[in-house]
Image 1 (tube, protein in one colour):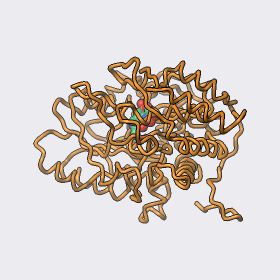
Image 2 (cartoon, helix red, strand yellow):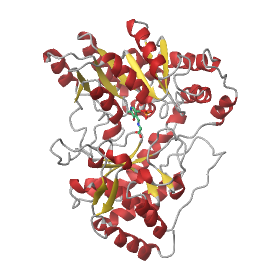
Image 3 (cartoon, helix red, strand yellow):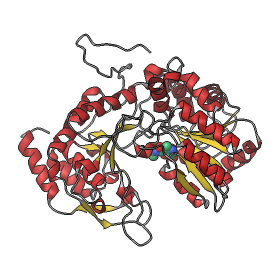
Image 4 (cartoon, helix red, strand yellow):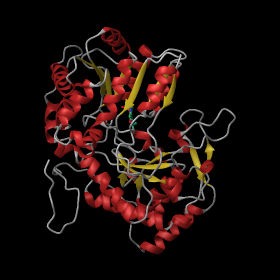
Length: 481
Ligand code: F0G
């Protein structure tokens, strides 16, 4: 893909699409934002969408569709069994991955559920670059234990390593050579979500596959965040410079046994599925899909979503389309770094990740720094990010907090959704918050659920720090929103 240079020399991520359908956004005055934050008990999941200006909670299921996707949805073939729309989707997926079978599922965790049910048994060990919450939950549910083998430095916020999502292949080889436990599969997650959307390299995948084959162990790739990973391989890995995105995709498939994905991220739609070659697992997985997800020609997805996904996956093979997300993220990372704001580096996929420990060094882990910065950013700009730190962990068996290794506030950049001025507004408000970071205090639970507490837990500030932050905003911005 050829770059587009500005005469001025400025480097800007230029959108390669135009906006033809819009949704009005509300930006409430800061006092009303404060009232909404209090009503949602300092838990941004409990906010109403109408009270949010920029929703950067996630990229899941909220990516913008193209005109071609919307058109395809109108002519989807509706049938419980044998829908033509499914066969069109299947053909595109088989072509992209060069594999024999596509088994549909309602979303990523549906794939994880059937894979864990089939493959994971009590006492099994599952090596991976890094876990995702739903993946871990299904593996643990089936009695497995995960072991994370990230490459060195992957959990350092600031680094120059281009592929922080790489698995440590030496550690993997040692583990497989010495363990006496059953290892049903090794899992490699594209765009490792919880460490900041960090990619793996093609070389790392190839070496991992070689090791797995040597030990006759399956390699499963979680391709939910593959779109950004594909682009970052193309940009950062010399050996992939002259490959097309489709070539890279095929190489990834040729170096894995099973690929599964959430099409809420990969495919600009909503759904998911498992892709694999012919073999004894196919029939068994099909039975579990029918039992848990739906018949083999829809797997829990609506035919409209399948039609949108068929086009969306084709669009994902176009570098000038998939460049937009990572380029916006890189722009945010660069601009925030210039202003001294601590962010995860290098820029990955999915979103820009603020290092909340750097932001609020005096807020102890037990008072949830990333959640505190998240609440502060909603006050500062009506922006909703997602806490990725201690609050998202479970307590230790003795009741103490398990302090997360990384305390991040994720600002997701859903694909094709925001304009550059909205991104610049976000940078501006994060910058303002950074300059006023000494005002940020902690949070504590007033209601703490036992399971996945971050979704519906209720919190309050540990002091009147939010009142002071709101007052400072008024003082700095006058009567501006
Ligand atoms: N794997 C990865 C790497 C993911 O990021 C997700 C979802 C899943 C699996 C599960 O897929 O939601 O379709 O069931 N990540 C979302 C997020 C929830 O906000 O990062 P799902």
